[in-house]
Amino acid sequence: MIYKAEFTDILKFIEQSIPQIEIVPADDLMHSLWLKRLAKGDPALTVDTFPVKAAVCLVIEVVNRREKIILSSIQAEKLVRSYLEQQSIHADLEQLGIAPENGDIYVHLSCRMALSKMAKLVTGVVSLASWDKNYCPVCGDVPGFACLEQGEGRRLLVCGACLTQWRYKRIGCAFCAEENPERLKIVTADEFPGWSAAICLTCNGYLKTADLRTLTSVPNWYEAVMETLPLDYALPLYMKNT
Image 1 (tube, rainbow, N blue to C red):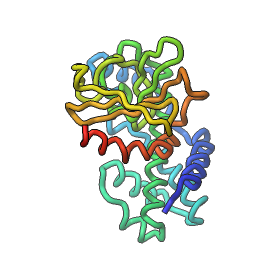
Image 2: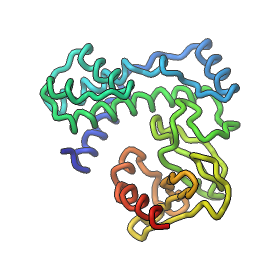
Image 3: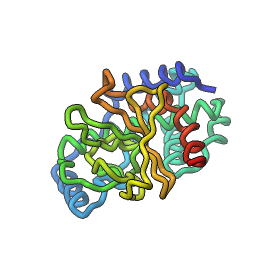
Image 4: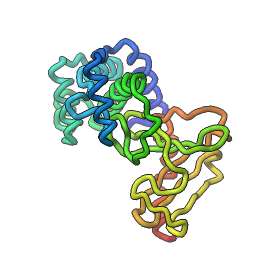
């Protein structure tokens, strides 16, 4: 079992490792393809452009650090590709002598942070100013968080996979686009100052939202997943009783 302190240690190690991990440099042709896909309303990246090699390197690094096990690139790539194909990696982890609950975190964070680095490459080249969809313009995933910008409080969605941020309308469900005020609620909790949850009674979705006008710093979104877990337990019960 990995607890919050251990999760943070793993996260910090991967964050320190990621600058040394190589992402294939993008050329003018790739830039052009990204722009064309965005113009059509498609995410810039496709499944084929996921940075597998970078994720593999991170898995090898973190397993060596945490488990003192040296994985081959073939073993690590098998874990990464199975994870990306949404297949269970537990049997492979056990065969390698890694507790599945630990290995899940290693692979999950490695893949997410490799994708995040690739996303920064994309957003350094293309503008997202005109993107108004409710899915990520870089990888196509759904939002994992939202935040309200300092100043005017405009809403940004934060991709649950690559952490790309893009502006989205302030009123409306970020999942089903419901705009009826009677179907939308904002819930706060005293235990989480500066945080709220946008709840949709139409699709039963909710989006945890950080108000950057009141928080002292921008959240580390990976850490925020763990820190706001109590909301994930409480909000479905709240909606059930609403």
